[in-house]
Length: 260
Image (cartoon, rainbow, N blue to C red):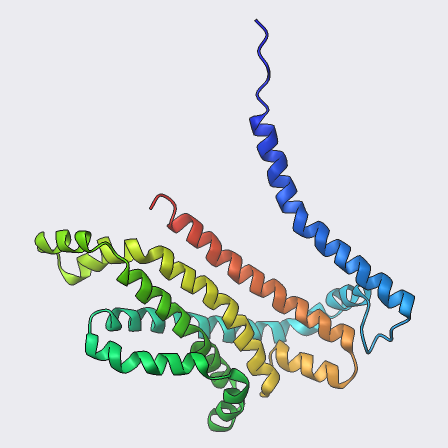
């Protein structure tokens, strides 16, 4: 008896390919419009470079820009890791002490409201032009979002499960390991993922404000020399690194929360 072939897997594969190609096709179309607009209107390279010129500068200056990229990556990763540790540690403290929560929460909100553009110059004056003020900028920008999401996650843990753990004479460590962190993990990872985006913004913004080294500083120098295509090429390095960091955290989030 003839059976109709099952096309479910084929359709699923085609959908995945379509979803993967959709953003690529959109980017290609936008770059094409950009290129044609620059050629048609004869826009000077120093004012708005063509995508072809930017891509050429990206590859031709790669060896020259790698040290700046390395400096930016180290500062951002150092600040980001510290921000995650501080944010989670504060969340543990705030959820275990009502007095400390009342005292520290307004200070954390203040850090959220401070514009980094105004803070970075003050940090440069106080701490010098090395990596320290840039790392601290990333920490200040990122730890509140990690802390707030972790606090929300801990607050939303099912109280019945907490009472059950306590009735079984579980220690504080066991309570957090087997119950609190497990239930709050989606919120915690969401905060960590959002912080990765803020880390990129804060790190490059701190370099643009002043100091030595880093892609932000290099972009500022290139713009001062009217090398706009090279400056845009440096921006591509920032975008690629940011997407890579965000993708890694997203991958960890997907496989950590799977089955929860």
